[in-house]
Amino acid sequence: MESSGPLAIEDIGNVRVLRLNRPEKLNAFNGPLLQALIDAVKAIKRDDSVHCFIITGTPRLDGRPVFSAGDDLEEAASGQAPKGNPGGELTRLIDDLLKPSIAVIDGICTTGALEIAMACDLRFVAETAAISDWHLARLGLGIGGWGASTRLTRLVGVAQAKDLILTGKVIDGSEALRIGLAQRVYPSATLWDESLKAAQAVASMSPSGVKATMMHLSHVEDMSKAEALAYAKQVREAIPTTGTFQDKAKSVLGKEKGKGN
Image (tube, one colour):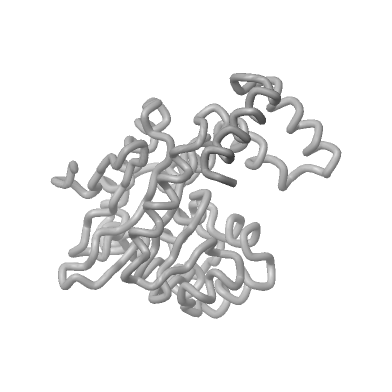
């Protein structure tokens, strides 16, 4: 594992783990961490051996779990914030990457950290997660600079997004699952093992098939049913999978018979 800098990187089979590694600052995003994440996501795009990746956080110095406290406000207040909008670049890179991403969240996940988690394809959370959006409460504007209000509204709907942003309330993992912000919730003790198991299941799928599926799913929400069906046909033709449907059916039946089904 590469762990000397603000981002620890580890490969577990075809799953790459990106672990936010500023525990003394609750894994807050400063310039070096954001740049390390940008470089890491670009590297994942180039590396055919990586089929799926996870973003998670190193525990606090006292061992308690934390995803991230969001953007490093101390850095910003001191005038040392990075130029441009690296957080926006990072979320766009994650959005556009046709390799599945999973945010694994326990403890605090607020504001900028939530923006990055929402850019991921899936969010697996602990029952003890503490998730919030404090853009409005802290900065006076509830839109966010990395896509916060847009992504949140698309994930949970306008009413739930208003409730989170306007009140600044903190929700746990079970509530995140209920409103559609998270896809799975686990006890803190089993979150990592269960999340890695799911990531490995994703990584075991056909890379070309995953790419084609991701291409389609990334756009269907903005299409009519007819447009989505037509686009599915275009994607199938653009990224054909190997073997005929007949061959695949025979293969599946053979495996099932081998299991005694």
